[in-house]
Length: 159
Image (cartoon, rainbow, N blue to C red; front, side, top):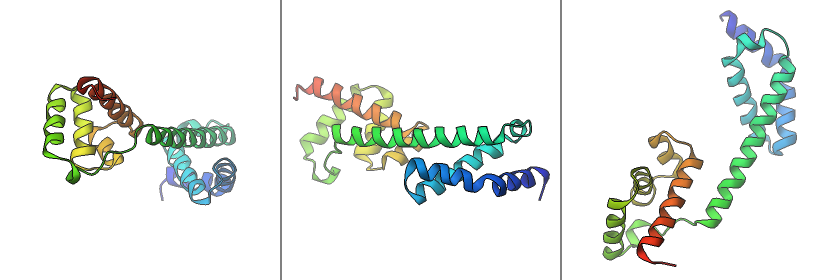
């Protein structure tokens, strides 16, 4: 074990339970708290130089709090987006006319939006898979899909 690994192990042994308890208090779910704790210590491993200069507890507390709050915000926003824009029916139930319309819209659409729509609605990838392929966040992908739907409704005159 090298010096960085030993330092990280020492941090985890000394503060792992505090980080876990903080995450559990904020998230209310042991699995989510475990994930948050892992993420915080991954970030700690990337900031060992900073942590050598003191304020370790404050840094861990702030990082844990920020990670948990961001996770809660992201989940809330994802739920809102799904409620606003439910996924379309599977591709195999579309009529040939609907596919022709979709192809025509994709030809005129913004490149990023068309790529997102193709991955999610045509290729039937999950939003996480599509976002990974595009190198963007799931939130950004959801905005691209929403923007395309709004634009497509205006193009087709749909309500």
